[in-house]
Image: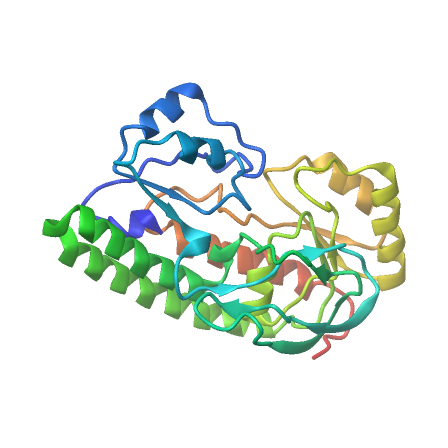
Length: 300
């Protein structure tokens, strides 16, 4: 998103490569020293990139830190806890605009895990970029931040942000049509990274293999997921290129589950101005491709 806003003006330096998981990433000392001389550091937030907490605390006041989860105007969703699999009616209570009353509800009547509860301490799910409406708001905000630092380039940043918004809006319409064709089909994700995508496109995971990217998945958890697959029948299980495939294979072995892959950060797409839309399109295509192959009747 930053690259799209800066297109033709400058090129941001990517700190976390696409093959790495930001949840467990450790910044090299040389990169940490380089950030000390930056004009702007853009991060998602500690919810997704824990390593940035110490980094931000060490930065001089001259470095502007943009924390995307704190950008005004976003639709924010709470952390889902449990990742169990007993069906119940989903109510996305806690979903709210960052500027609105946090008590507003946005109910949806979709089946998801019964213990997919919401964090009682108000923790926010940090994967905000997977709602394209949020991505558009982030682009506008970044354009404003950069315009204050480089006022002579303000018009270019604004034009780039507007172009990005239009491109994302067109891709969103395309993805809405694609996801509507597989709505109601059950899937399990590797970790609970897709809450925003699910909420925006009205599809919902029935659980995730990992309870947390920071917590190793043991034999008990694998048994729980396998038992859930047996109850659900055909289901798609999505791995991620940033995480080992052996765990996915252990879960799916001797079951009727279809295996797919989702990449929430688009590690295979070249970084640059077109990366975000390419990532979102591929994510939706990969999800829909697996779900379309399930031998179940789609439910609404």
